[in-house]
Image 1 (cartoon, rainbow, N blue to C red):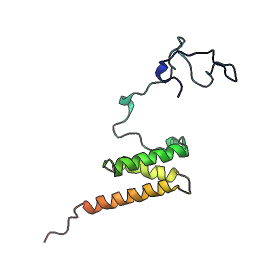
Image 2 (image 1 turned 135 degrees about the vertical axis):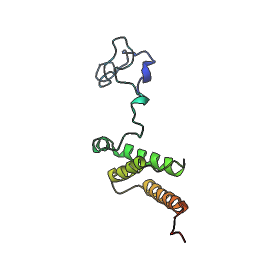
Image 3 (image 1 turned 45 degrees about the horizontal axis):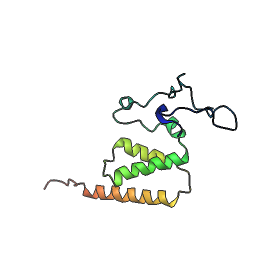
Image 4 (image 1 turned 30 degrees about the horizontal axis):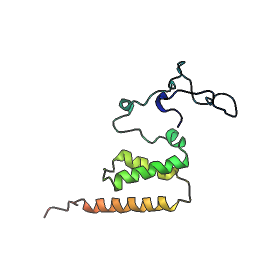
Length: 132
């Protein structure tokens, strides 16, 4: 979108409908024609366990992003073989609760794949029986 990182010169001579040089709603500039003053992503600001799926965060997600995040989590669990941590399980549950119905066949297939993976992992866990 737009001018990532402010790497390109902004040309305000473009013809646009509102005559504002295409800068409406794009945030403040640094006064030198450079990048927006929006805060940059800082990986060190992410908690070690990730961000929990809070209600306020989930309500900010539209359906497209909700479904995309759900598919990412399913991919990480099923195809990448990552652990189903309590945090990731919370995210999957929250995203499933947030998705509007009816679900598309892609979501149904993803849920079936996730259930199959969970069943396979559960059957691989050695059940400790009573000592004889």
